[in-house]
Image (cartoon, rainbow, N blue to C red; front, side, top):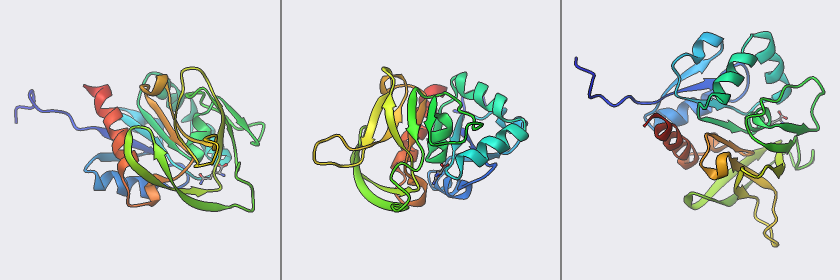
Length: 211
Ligand code: GLN
């Protein structure tokens, strides 16, 4: 078949060393987007975008190191591959993490300081609707032992905050490059709901980077 005029459909790699992988896989399936589980460095070849799922960030960090994935994954993201981190994935992407183990690695793909388990140990999980810049109706957000973003660098855009009376609710979604960059992260888990709009937003980022 002549493929010269064919538009290439994105292939998204889901980091699969630990954590909530299958939910992201199912969400991409619903959106009709191809995915591949990334367990070894070779699995990074040819992926157009990456998802770093939720789970346990310190365990993921350790497994990335042991599996030789830490360096190639970091390089792939720093080379501009669109990347979406949820919860522990957000923690991995940060440049600084509070409340983590001293030997946990940061990929420094987002200029943010993140606090792990920030909503307190009592508040293990909660759900709320929040306004998300770039998505027209509120997004239903599920938080599970979630981090929040304590501070963002100059070129990082805040996309969502937990609703609060004074408009100063905790930052729970960000995007690099003044909101036009290739790295997206949420404290919450859009993959555990049937609202696929945050993933759809990310797929658009991937498609734009391929165009
Ligand atoms: N508390 C976890 C961590 O620090 C993140 C929780 C999650 O990904 N749902 O890694």
